[in-house]
Figure 1 (cartoon, rainbow, N blue to C red):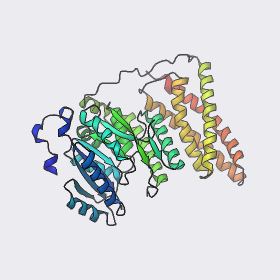
Figure 2: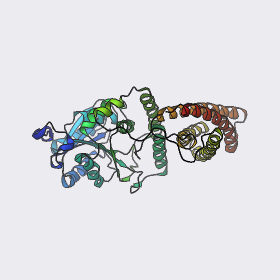
Figure 3: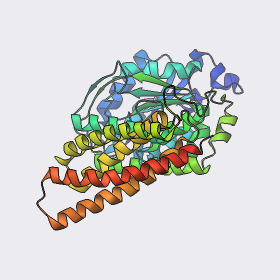
Figure 4: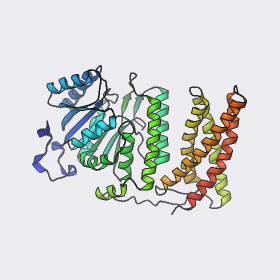
Length: 415
């Protein structure tokens, strides 16, 4: 397939100028111990591609150090079809598999999907077409946009929406669904962005999309029909913790300038964002009193949201874990709201610094609330949930004062 994937007719022209009929697509399927479902999924996918895809295509099964018969099945499928190949990796990691196979590909457009094919395949052509035409740089399937039809349990729905809310608040992203296993990008863009992506596992998707957006690339979203795989082996708790660590690492990298986004933007010739970094919001007083009123209103709303979220999470989690999650979610939302409503700051400039300050205030709040809970349980081990909540409310009130002073100081220094 390597010769078929080489476009020798015009090797000097970029993908944006190639006619659609010459385009080639490589779809990577990362797998780990998927012997039970691999053959059925690959046959279904290749059958669809042969019948419905107007581009030259290849399916690459990227085996992530499987310990069952996955690799043997993959090799047999590759022997049966010129449109299927196998890449074996000695270490696990979805991000590692995608990075290695995409960087080695000769295709014009690179894509991947999960082996369970949870996303309806009819969305594949709408995903690829904007990249082939040159209209967009990256394309993603989204389960959270209007028009999407999703079947999954309330727990995973809540986690997904909460995670994407954190991304919007902490990193200022505009895409709606970071973790849907249905994405594609132009090869020239991949060759520039992939070396900057550090994560080798589940956070790979988010990191790649954040870097793409920061580079000024156009991200096309496709509403999808998606059915949750009840047999998935993904550890949701471990994945969520890994993602939160990834968000913090990205915040530090982008804030410090360690990640050379400016150079990438210049190299890819993307125009700079034209919107002003800071703009006043109509109706927001500039005086301290007006800021206090609005900060207090947002604080009340945040406290109510925190209380509801804490009580909901307390059903399944212990007090400290429920407090951590509820506080993290409402802290990010609180900073985002205060940025615009209280202090009249808009745009992306200073966003990371503002949220870093908010996260620092969050750490202080976490220390205060966790310490208060520990003290309460030491004195009254059987305290009711409403007593826990009352103690946490008092600790949060102290933390709120600290948050206002910290945010006011950093917002005042915004350009």
